[in-house]
Length: 130
Image 1 (tube, rainbow, N blue to C red):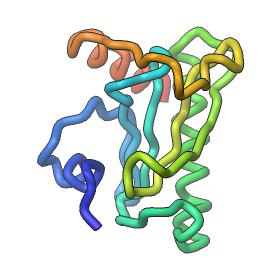
Image 2: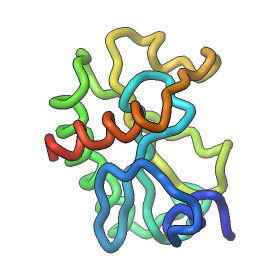
Image 3: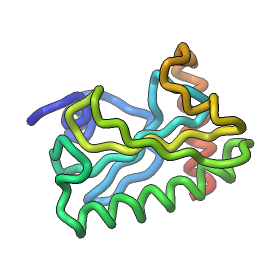
């Protein structure tokens, strides 16, 4: 099942890449809740995160942990929040969100808007801490 994430993985749509392996990809959300909001995805096309095979699921979580560690160093925040909703795009993904309060994880809030230059600078800052 092709999604926008499939096109990002294939390089058909650009993204602000933070980290990548042969199996996983992490990139900035272009409609973030906070600066540094990252999406972490398996390259395998699976809609629902709990339908991933065990090895891929564990690998995704370990990859997210590495990315979250770099994100925490790059963006000033109290914690990195993690959310899996899975309704908006039919491709398993994890949201990593720098937070200072629980309200920072409120997906009903208006999303932030950053310029391409700001997103690129944020991605580079996070990469420098991985």
